[in-house]
Each structure stands twice: as structure tokens, then as C-alpha cells.
Length: 250
Image 1 (tube, rainbow, N blue to C red):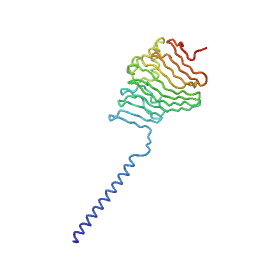
Image 2: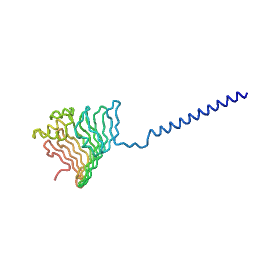
Image 3: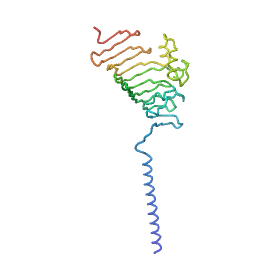
Image 4: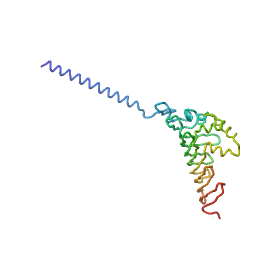
């Protein structure tokens, strides 16, 4: 009888010890799990990548921007330096192509400040087609939505038409554009890079306005509400002449 009681006591002791070990392991796991998910994560650049390592989303401070890429190649050399000083969130399509982003910049100097808050979305293998932005300096501000048409061609093919390789600098691009004949330059640039079609917002003159342009970039409909004075609706022809205005001019 005594031997049976002793065996039972020992079994109870082992069970208590096992439960104690399980309890300590559970507490340790909870502590480790809590430490593995910090409440605040402080980094200078955070890159969300696809399983193959290609970027999906990049959040960067003002000193660690990322350059835009297309088909795995940098679109413009020197872009990282141009973006330096501007915190950003850059969107990629999971295939390595940049497709837009957000910029939040403030540059201060002796002549005041330049502020930009900018959201853009790019077309397929193309530049931005939708921009929602606010620009401000000591002289005033402009805020609005811009919609643009882009040609149905690869951006790098447009550069090739100018004799440029992918990654050409902004200065090289400007120089190539200036080599185009002046009389056909504007039309050629629309053919290669497209044109703005619509603007809805406020101008530096504090006028609220809607401007619609045709495929050649010409203003065709303008609805304007100035800060003070009479609002108007104007319809223009291909030559920029007003063919209808409401209210009518006296």
C-alpha cells in the first residue's frame, strides 16, 4: 500500500514539473513573440519586394531615394540625386517598373521656400498620366488634378527616336530636344511624349478653373471662377479664338 502511494506521489510530482515547464515555455514564447513585432519601426528606407526580389513599394527618407526603372534599366541617370531632399513613396508593378509615387518636399533658402506634395500614376511602359499635386512658394500656390495622354509606345522607343539610350541625363534629353527643327518641335514632342489634356484646380492667381485641351494640346474649353469677379465658360476653336462665351461679352 505504501509503495502504491509513493508511486502515485512521484507521478504527481512529474506532472507538476511538466506543467511548470510548459508554463515557462509558454511565457517565454509570448515574450519573444511580443518582442518580434515592435510597436515602432524606424528605418531610413523600407523596400517591399516580390518573391523574386523585384520591388513592389519603396518608402524612403529625403536622403535615400530610389531611381525610376523600366525593364530593369534606370530611366534617367542622376534621378536619385534630383530626388534627394524629398521624402518619397514610390510604386512599382511587381515586375520592376516604376508606376508612380508620392513626393513630399520642402526646400528652404534665402529667397523663401518651395513646397511640393505630389501623387502621380504612370501609364504602361510610360510616364505619368495622372497627377494630383500642390505646389507653393512665397508668391502663391497651385493645386489640382492633371490628366495627360501618352503615346502607345515604349518610353525607351521615344528616347531612341531622339538618339538617346536608356539612362540619358536630363541635360542630354534637353539637348536632343533642342536639335529638333523648331517649326516641328512641338508636334514631334507630342508624338513622342504625349500632352496634357485636362486640368482641374486652382491657379497661382487664385482662380478656380477647369481647362480641357484637344489632342494637339490646345485649350478648347475653359471654365473659370476668379477669386473676385464674374465666372465664365469659354469655348475656343483650333486657332485659340473664342467662339462661345458665357456670359456673353458686352
